[in-house]
Image (tube, rainbow, N blue to C red; front, side):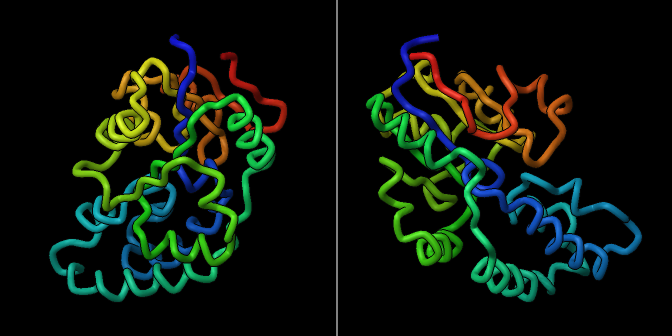
Length: 209
């Protein structure tokens, strides 16, 4: 592992403890449109909206995509964006160590505007914020994390990725980066094979530089 130059964070389930809220939202949609598949909301965790649409809202259900998108936009506008425990202190620690910080998320700019309204300080916490509009390929492809590393002129080995979803963890691994898994969305034992270390939250966690 090279000296750490950049810390790259997924958004939901990593910076913000939002996954329980998304489970509620998608649980309602899945029960309405896929009552034959109980628990589907748990299977689609960590997937992008396009991935969810392609897998579950295609064919005869394709016509309801605009309705779902509007429902999701409305839901995200009013969500509670609560920081994962210890995150604010951790990001302050990183910046004192001159480690670059970035959000690398599959969320779009419309969602981020809701984040900025709730947290005016948010943009000041990071050196870069990369969203779905910045990537050609979605996680688990490494494209997003490689682009973030390039933004800072850092090698993959000098980057640490913080992820909670399986697709995100695989993306960080595929990029050749050090991966820390947060057990906020999936069980620690389930994500352990896909990362170098599992943490519950950021309290008392430090990067060895």
